[in-house]
Structure formats: C-alpha cells, structure tokens
Length: 293
Length: 289
Image 1 (tube, chains in turn green, brown):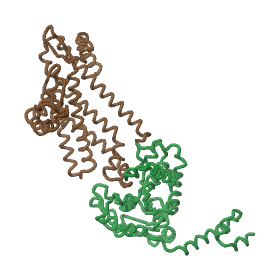
Image 2: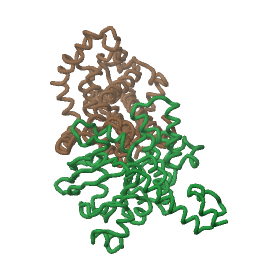
Image 3: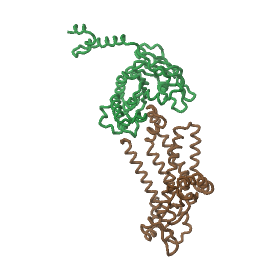
C-alpha cells in the first residue's frame, strides 16, 4: 500500500487519512517546494525608500529602505527604542500626528508615494489599516458600532451594506462566532484578546490593502496571543501585513520576512528563516540568539 | 452646612409663604406699601431662567470651541498663552464685569446686536421692542462672558484626559479631524462636558451683582419679559436691590423667600445634572446612537 501511495501524483498523496506520518511529512514538504518553484516572484506592495524620522531634534529613524512583499507578513523586530514602532507609524503617516514629530523620505504604495505633497494623509489611512499595542475599542460604542465606525466616518449610509461588512469583518477577525448574539453589547465588555480582535475587525471593515500591527499581542496572554498569530496567517492570504514585535518567537512564527533594527537603523532584512538561522550581521546573530534585547 | 443654610432660609421665608401661600410662586405683583402688601416671585424666576438660558446658549458653544481649539488644533505656542488668557478672565470679579458692561459694553450690544435684530427681525416676537441696552439680553451676554472661562477650562481638562489611543484609533480609520472629535473624543468626554456646563449654569443662576447692574431692574408684572429686550429682574438681583430698604418684616420675609426659591432652583438643577450625567455614563456604553 505505502509504495502505491508514493507513486501517486503529489496532489493525491496529501489527501487520504490512512497515511503514515513520515509519508505525510515528505509529501507536504514536496508540495511546498514545488509551489515555490512554480510561483513567480511575489510583487512588492510597499517600498520604503530612505525614511528618516524625528521626535523634536532627536532622530528616531536613520535612512531606512526596504521592500514589503504583497500578501505576506513582514516583521519588524529589535530591542525597545530601536525605532520599529516609529517605522510602522511612518507607513500610514501616523508618526507625524505626534506633536513635534516629523518624517522625511518616500513610502511607495503601489507606485504612489504617500509622502507626496498632493496626497491627503486621511486617504492613506483608509488604504492602510492599523492595530495598536493596547486594544483601543471605542468605549461608548457597541461591538457592532465599533466595527461600523470606520464606515460611518467615511460616509457609508447603506444599513444593509454596513451590516454585511460588519459581519464579514468580524468573521475575518475570528470573532463572529463569539459575539454574533451580543452585537449590541459594549465593546469594552469583551476580554482583552477579544477586544484586540474587535480592533482588527474594525480595521478590516475599511477593506485595507495593508494592515499594520504594532505589537498587537504585547498586552495579551499567551492564548489570546496565539489566536492573533493564527489570524495573521489567515489574513495574509489576501492582505499585506506588517507586524512590529519584540518577541522573536512570534516573528519566527508569523512572518515571511523579518527586519532587525537597532538604534534607528536597519541592521538586516531578509527571509525570516535566513534571519534566524544564518544571520549575516553579528548584531542580528546576538539578538536572535538572545544575547541582548 | 447646607442644612443649616436651608434651615435658616426656610425659617425666614415662612411668614411670606403663610401670607401668600402658593401665590408667592405664581403671583406677579410686588407691592411693599404698608397695608397693600402683595408679593409674587414669578417674574423673577422667569428672569433668572431666561438670562441664564441666554448665557448658556451663547457660552457653552463658545467654551467648547475654545477648549477644542486649545487641545485639539492649536500648536503649543498658541494654545498655552490662549488658555492662560481665558483663565485670567475667570479671575475678574463680577462687579468689574458689571461696571464695564454698564458703562461700555451695553452700548456695543445695543448698537451692534440688538438694533440690527430689532430692525430686521422684529416680526419675531423675541425681538419686538426698541432696544435699550439694559435688559435681559445684555445680562445674558455678559453672564456668558463670565461663565466661558469656567466651562472652557474644565472642558479643556476633560478633553486632555481623553487617551491619545482613542484619537489614533479614529485617525487610523481614515477619520478627519472633525470625524475624530465626533467619533472618539466627544463620546468619551460627553458626560464631563455636560457636568462642566451645569457648573457654569449654577454660576449664572446665582450671579447677583453683575445682573443687578445690567438687567434693568423692573418690578412687578412689568418684570415679566415679553421680549428678549425687556427690562427684567432675577431672583438674586431683586434681593440685592431691596434688601437694604426692606419696609416691613413681611417684605424682608418675601426677599428671603426669593432666596429660598433660588436655593431650591440651583439644587434642583444641580441634582438634575448629576442624575443626567450618571444616567448617561451608565446608559451610553451599551446603547446604539
């Protein structure tokens, strides 16, 4: 029997349940390899070109450039104060909302420089969603209204459409099953992890192309965190995700690409596997092996 | 303390209530001549409420505007001096406002606001009286100037404690500045802003000397305002006007009776405001708009 299985085409071999486990492993890895060879190189969704950022006179980012792949997860990691949060906040022009903060450089989203003078920062935020460190649902609003907030802010009036999008977004954030019977209840009544997924749903309702996640699990317990990580895997099928984390294991689990930053500079950027197993820079090696940070 | 005050006022007002009964509240006559004494407080209750209402209608939006400008819009180098200046206004004694209003400001109001309103809008009953400058409308405007510093400085502090994460949440959804105020800031600060407004209202209702100087000091049925430009009288201003020259014990008791009504009025408003705030705090989190 096993011999027959092996001779079958790969696509069939993954199916049956009666497989022995080593065989399963082999076939899965073969599938992945073939997939990688077949697929054309992925497109770059966001290219960051020479971004510099300041808080007052203090420079927080020094000439950072990198390419973010479409429909994949990219992690920014590094020790506290390395500028990873500043960098992600530069990608939807949130950084400059802080008094005294400014940013210079280019961030090109599908060929458009979002720092171009003709671009309205408000429009940019509609295309690039954001989830924050601490869950921040609107406390006076129900679960439903929280998710619908962005739509209402942008003038969507069609109630049926709003309802559909709210349901879709909650499903997308893996929260629908838990809250479908209590949409009228306040968003603040949910647990921390649920609140964070509510915030993700709120961002998804805007149907963004890119989702920025700024340490989305730092305020959550391990179980809630793992749900968010799982969600990242789901979401990146249709969405470009950029996630900031100071948790290396998390970066290794969720990200396809990882950037290591230190003191406002980009030290190394590459495939996550490469960064963790064959870091090119000594500093990166020290960080991923836990010697500092 | 409050009980002591309430007790003293109540005791002092007892003779007038036994003399006039309920008429004291609903009556409009005010006659202190011996033998023909008749006292009714209705015109002054209306005068108090109307002048305070005008003060609120003008003062609250302006205060909100100042607070929003200072916390949400202005750069630091403008907002700090601006809020300092606004707060300085709160330190001006009300008699100074009164003097200024009496000698300067009332002519501005008469010539720049009341007259145009009268000339163009006199078909609206509110404005159908030749303006004089010393009237309920002027009193309301000057009161609003007096309560703006209080309301705006409290509102500013309330807006300051709205967490930035709330504003960023709205901004990240593509909200404009106004959208952020509407979605994230106001709902969070709503009950506090309401409380600040009622604090201002309490101040306006009880304000005495300023109102006495500019409200026109009408007496009796004539003090029932038929237009906004009528001369009126508030509870507090009538007490201040007549207390020194109370003709009889009954007259004195009538004035204390006005005080009792004033005390009751401000208590009711205060308690009402508290109930409203607490109900809002409880009701809002669950409710859809």
